[in-house]
Length: 529
Image (cartoon, rainbow, N blue to C red; front, side):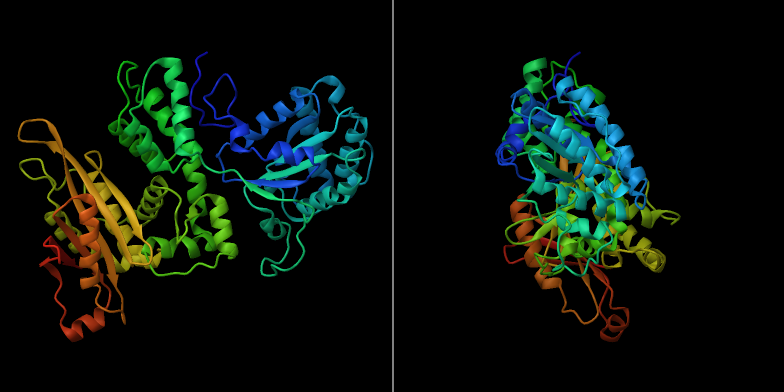
């Protein structure tokens, strides 16, 4: 069977295109050789289980270790019943050993022991019976919670001193979160960050990083070597720009193009194919995306995501549990100077999901291609005029139930644009963290004068004028001027949501559209709503 891009479950050598585990986790062999216990954490569907399985296979094949991946998922249902959870875990452990280890490296009959010591007794018996040092990768460790998680961590910590003869030589706890969050999941007080870790024997915490641009190229080159179909260099760079190397997204875009869109093998894959695949993924909202979006209502996540979407000036505490948790989920990434949504696809999906919640049951949402001029271009002034009417008619309803109230205006405008442009273009989002702004680029496809397809580009900057704030108009014009310079455009729209209703009436601020000129001579339509 021809290899394909893996998007569901762990990738399998020979069936899927893969980046070698040794390249993604080069530290692990040395940690194992030193008999270290360590933590490996990564967001979901970043290739963690795939890498662990490949490492375990390589370690066993070396002839020096008996290495196997054991899933803790079986214990999820018994947070308060340690015995039931342990028996379920050990049952799957025996199956994993039968599937991946030679007969002489498999565990003996599990010993009889009391519930709170059964896991340690089993691991100890296995280590003593095994002719090689035993290495265990405990995957999905954060599927456990409450008393069961606390017991498992305690038993592993207690057995640590008996390694390698009487307990596994090396153990890795592998999951979504770093060890600092295990105390919370096991019932500890999340506000007492100075209290002891439930796994204080670990020598290090590794985070499985996203693909680099070179790794994306290497992955796609494997497909080209197998099929002869090429991606243009620009297409590969565009994939990286959209995904920032998030492994599931990198694979999913390629799978969408070659398996679902079925671009002919004789056709070189271009940036346009990547854009279409991105839109299809976002609209379909695959399981990976949905699982992330379910977290948006978590207060810890909202406290980080909302100010990023609003572009407000926030200095995130680098030691904040909220920030660590949201980063571990893969929703945000830290740069040298700020915190931002992890990648442009997540940015797009997050605002669309929030907008979908707003538009449910609200009349007046536009139909696709509602604002098209006679020559095929997008009528953006007409669209903004109609949106203004929609906003003033529904503002109170939209804000009543919205948990992300600070960004309701931004999200509502994005939802309106997405619905009006659906199928004929794209709305690219950028969040101006610290600038109180959201930058938007509309790319609208239409026939040009010669009949060939052309792209109309329109840039908007969205700001909010709240009570007590200084008028953002002049700052917005300057910021938009820089955005237009970067895009190579001469005109743009500054959209200001004026939320000072009482103050606006007092000072007589005029709503509507006014034309301004930036310092560099660009024409700015200031739309005050």
